[in-house]
Image 1 (cartoon, rainbow, N blue to C red):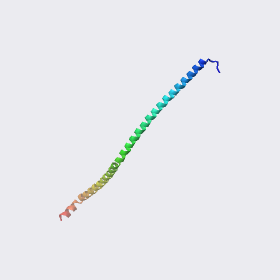
Image 2: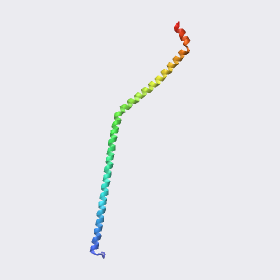
Image 3: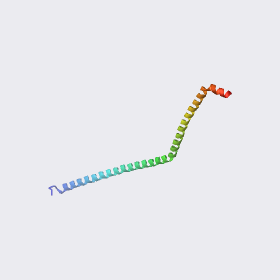
Length: 110
């Protein structure tokens, strides 16, 4: 044992107990703050999850529209190519007729 008086030893024990209680209170406060941060993170994840589900639903409903758009786009491209060839053919025929106009007039008037 030490040569300290009983009152000094009790005062030291009291201080140690106070320090232990303060550390426990700080730990509890830190744990509570950590739980609150986790709760906020989980709520954020839930929000993102629900937004993602809505977005997936939106894509599912717009998929036919996208497919229709693609089909129309291909039809338009095909029509454009066909139109270009029709113009080329008509221009060639008209050019040929213009070049051979005298022969065509002679053939028609006989």
